Length: 185
Ligand code: HEC
Image 1: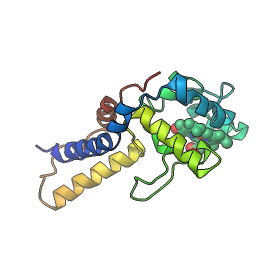
Image 2: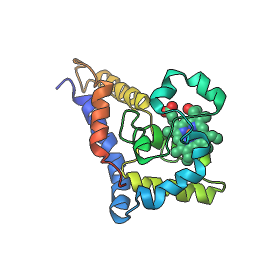
Image 3: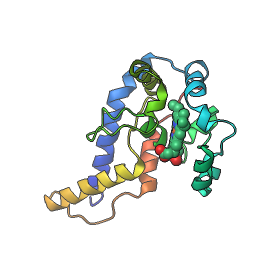
């Protein structure tokens, strides 16, 4: 029972996003080859192209690559997946998000690159949402912090005895990963 609060929080979190977006993704069949690839080509590859480092290389020396103006490659389906359901799960959805579904309305840092007008940015964002299906506009550390603060509240309110540990980041990642099937190629 001690682990209930974070699990409930994770469940609610997943349900929230599943309800919001699963219907849209069932109806539309957005694919990487047909829709996403060209958006990425036009709007992302100046900084994230084939001349840029892989995420693995990038994290080893961010400073060097920032000086060169080169950021992790997203020029293939596989490289994009690293940020969708791979090791850096949540990084793409968080960065592309317009912030509207977040309490703090914080816009993702890549949202501005989705187009040169607000209409186009919204249209391209919708394309990514329909493609990915389960949209997570938060970084993993934010999700973890929220779950820990839910856990703390439940202890303070007396609805949990507070024993046991909150979920590890790996467990949280696993839970989220289960809800993101690989978007269609
Ligand atoms: C003008 C250059 C530029 C363009 C164009 C650009 N980005 Fe970025 N991107 C950056 C910079 C700078 C960072 C790192 C700074 C930061 O973390 O916000 C970054 C970071 C990222 C990251 C996170 C990498 C990490 O550290 O986890 C992702 C994912 C990403 N961009 C995706 C995209 C996508 C998708 C597009 C196209 C819609 C795009 N970017 C367009 C400059 C760009």
